[in-house]
Image (cartoon, rainbow, N blue to C red; front, side):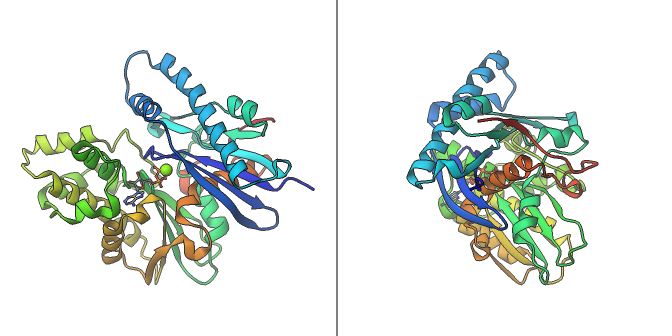
Length: 368
Ligand SMILES: Nc1ncnc2c1ncn2[C@@H]1O[C@H](COP(=O)(O)OP(=O)(O)OP(=O)(O)O)[C@@H](O)[C@H]1O
Ligand SMILES: [Mg+2]
C-alpha cells in the first residue's frame, strides 16, 4: 500500500504550543488526528529573544535550531503514539518551523527547527523551508495556507472567506466563480498584541475569551493612531509578523502621542483595532453574500468574534468546523498538505497570493 498519511507541524507566532496534525491524502483529503504540545518556558523565552536583533545571534540560533528540531520530533512521535498511527503509512512530515525573522521586503524569511534532526529522530521523510523558494521567485513567502484553503474549502456556488486568526491574521478570498484567482494576504495582527499586553499586565498568556478586553472601553484616539500605520492601507500582496506588531511599537505610539489610558482600555482598543483591520480588509473585497469561516486560536476569543460579526458584511460567521476541519488544526493540516504537494512534485504557492511570478514546488526534502 502506498503511504498516504502526512503529518503537519505548525508552531506559529503566538508561541502557544506546537500543533501536530495527521491527515490522509489519497483521492480525497481527510483529517485523522491532532495534538498541541507545550513549548517549555525557557525555550519560548529563547525563541522570543531571537525574534529581535541582539548579540551573538548565530550561536544562539544554531543551538535553538537543534533544540527545536528535537522538540518537533518528540511532538510528532507523541502524536503517532497517542493516535496509534501505523508508521508505514506515513509518507512525510511537513514542518513549518519557528519563524524568527520575516523580512519579505529584504527578500528573506527564516524558520528554524532542524529538519535533519527531525528525520533522524522520527525516521520519517521531512519537508521544511517552505517559504524561501517563493521569496526567491519574487513573492512574500506568505501566506502559504490559501492554496490549501482553496483546495479543500472552495465552493462552486458560494463566495467564501476563510479567516485565520493566529498571532497574525490572514484572509483567503474564495470566489464562487472557479476561474477567478484566489486572493489572500495578512491583514495585520491577530492575537499577538492582545497576548502581549495582557501578559505584561497580569502575566497570563492570553485574554481568555476576550473577557478583559470586554470589560474596558476602546479609546478612539489611540485606535486611530494605531490604524494610521501604512501597512493597513498597502495593497496586497503583503505579509507581516512580530517585526511590525510588537509591544515596543504599541508603547511608542502611546508615548509619542502622550496618551494616558488605563491598561484595560488599551486592551479594549487593541481588540477593536484587530477587529477593524480584519473587517476593513474583508469588506473591501466587495463580495456578494460571502460566507465567513474562522480558524486559528482567535476563534476562542468570543469578544473578538462578536465584534467581527458586527463589523463584517456577511451572510453568517462560523468556524471551519462547519466545513469539516476543526479551527485549531487548519494550519498544521495545511503543512501536511504542503508536504504532500512537494513529495508529489506539485506546486504549493499561489502567485496571486504571494506575488511570486510563478508557481513553484516548495521546500527541501530530507529523506527518511
Ligand atoms: N480561550 C481562549 N480565549 C482567547 N484567546 C485564545 C483562547 N485560546 C487560544 N487563544 C488565542 O489563540 C492563540 C493561539 O492561536 P494559534 O495557535 O492559531 O496562533 P499561532 O500559533 O500564532 O498561529 P499562526 O501561525 O497562524 O500565527 C493564543 O496565543 C491566544 O491568543
Ligand atoms: Mg499556535
